Length: 323
Image 1 (cartoon, rainbow, N blue to C red):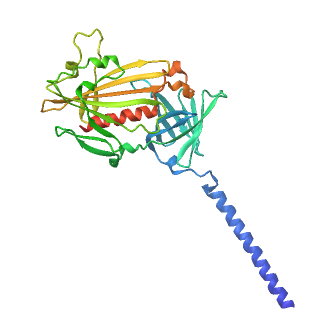
Image 2: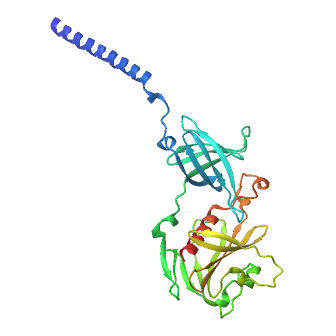
Image 3: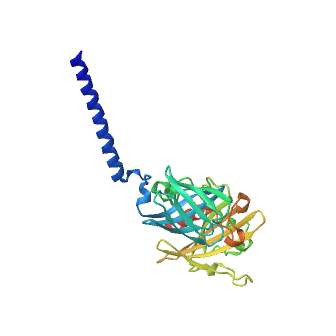
């Protein structure tokens, strides 16, 4: 009995001493290790730059963000006017991963499950706040399998989205949309050779109500101004747009109503080395974004553009660049 008791006592003492040793080692490790800090996700350690899209309340938003060390900068991208404007953002990332962005409002949030989630405040002392979520912008239309190649009747190749359709149409049916000023584009038979309509997929768009794309193939026309009426009292402002390696002439018309806006864009491209030129006519309409509860001040921002509308314009301009 005595031997057995002594043996058990030694075992108990050994276990106690071992437990004390483990506790001391654990305390030393805790005091010297940084593991007691809040874990930081890898994106908070690495520098990055890119576009992020999501919603602010019920309103679609897009931000461009850059991170260098713990400093943040970027732009809130406006998507309503014909020319994209932006609001500068500056901020920082706290040690625990909380981000702060300032610029006509305050964004605070964290990276959660692959996206940035948080709240937007109108000012530092404002109780008015809106939840927002952001994820990296990775549109499908940047992938090669989104596109297919179509041949026009004169052998010209053009890329269009796989879910689109391309049809020949009568030249007299061109430029007969809502925009009155587009009716005056010249359609003389001796210079207008072919006409096409391209039907685009209007997916996940709750704001764009109408959209169609027309293409006129001209012969012997060197500039967009040759197709505009010379005796018109309207002053036409033609801009130059660079798409990939192509210089495109751009003319825009807009008609606003209480419920939304109607817009026409004319893109003219003259192929170098031959007499062929292309005139794309994009027509679309969209509802008034302010009915969707945009928290920003309309007077300050002149109305942000619509994210999904801008996506469709990007697709059209990629089609034009492929000719």
